[in-house]
Length: 480
Image (cartoon, rainbow, N blue to C red):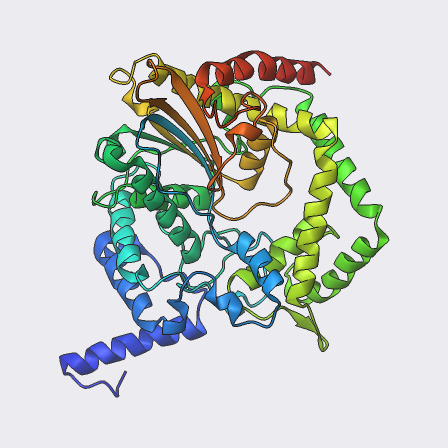
């Protein structure tokens, strides 16, 4: 620092230079101690500094980083589906009055679950849109302010690390995905959005920083005018990824056996195809040189590691002159999609999903019923409930409702249950199910058969399915 002059300008330039060098050469350095900096001022300093050193190419439109890489148009769209968060239609029929919303989200983009050597090679910069800096900085302020008051701040950081793709941790891209999703939900609420304030929203999260931080980002997108994010987020106990403790459905003794049966069937179907085993084995030979610990020859493990490279626009890993190609990652994805179709036809897979999902679907239905009964003033907290969780939460819920089973789904996937009435329809109450922006109500078991003449699914039919049919399937599976 002896080259710095006493002038304010020079000191400022030196500070930026030192900060840039720290980011460049020590990306994993745990300097982000917001408490020691003073949470609000520390957040401002860090966010502003990060934005200054971000190259303009990272502040780019959706998916443009993929277009810079060598791949076919088909491969590009296939990868974009899994890397970019799904979109929600922000408009509704004006004749409808939205009464309640129950929403289940998967966390946003994260680092791979398997630690990669020299993770600084796979940086996680800002890369979504030109409007990012203001949006992200406002979120950073709100999250940091909440951290000073939250009882959970000791357990989880309110904001993810921004200097690398850390193992299993939310990235800045993941934050942006849920800022955007929350904003889209706010737009969809329309004229009702002002009445859906943070005070009337109940938030639940699993016991992971990435789901907790995703919930915070979503809530800021939902209500950006509020300077702070809700102080109270209900954290599920460790190991409860389905919120089964809320419905007291965690103690089914056969769930582990059926889970083991699912794993066995998945492995058998995978091993029936020698060329698929050969593909993942060959890729593992390359990937293994980049991992701290070896992983099993499972396509899901290969997918998890390679997706981290793809979603952040990095060249695929190489070993001794041989590199993984983007097309090979698409081959792995296709393999998993085909395997999902085969598993969907197996009764054990549906049983496995029902055992997982029944408790959460029961909770969702009871919350909606409280509003349908006209108890909005007595139970305003049930009008909008957010569950922030994982792919292993979203998939069982959708499969239990009758949609196809999926092994892998995009980051920031969501399921939205809307309770609504229609003007001039005698006060009837209906339910809509939206999965990743698509209205899938007619594809669910209780609401199958909707037509243009009868486009609405009565909520009572959906509730009867959960309370009778699904409950019976759950109890039968537990007795098996």
